[in-house]
Length: 167
Ligand SMILES: O=P(O)(O)OP(=O)(O)OP(=O)(O)O
Image (cartoon, rainbow, N blue to C red; front, side, top):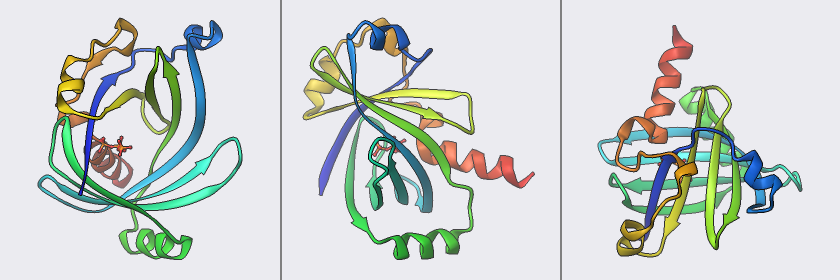
């Protein structure tokens, strides 16, 4: 199983100035529709519809994650549009929608997620090892480190979205 080691920050404002000054270079922009199929303790199964906002290419993934905090197990693979549609129909939930901007700042690849249904933007950085993740010194503009705060995990945010839209 692959390991996912990442830290998450609560991005206070979109870093427009850094982009304009060329300090933060945008690599890709994707729209992600995310739906959870099942959640049980630290385990989750989710599907995504991913649209490349530059090329228009659409892909679908199925992901299993296990664990919490900075280090988790992850298995992810591509699925067909047909499988994706069958699964989201079965779940009949509201997909969590976000725009994911992948960019490079100072040799570090960052993923900025801007959630369209909520007032929330986060920034994530992936690492090769726990040592690297723990020793990484984040700049001020990344915002508060929420890596271990469950309320900002996508499954929690997705669950809240379901409750909101049901009422
Ligand atoms: O894109 P990932 O796999 O890092 O996943 P996410 O949708 O940001 O979700 P979380 O890290 O909250 O599981």
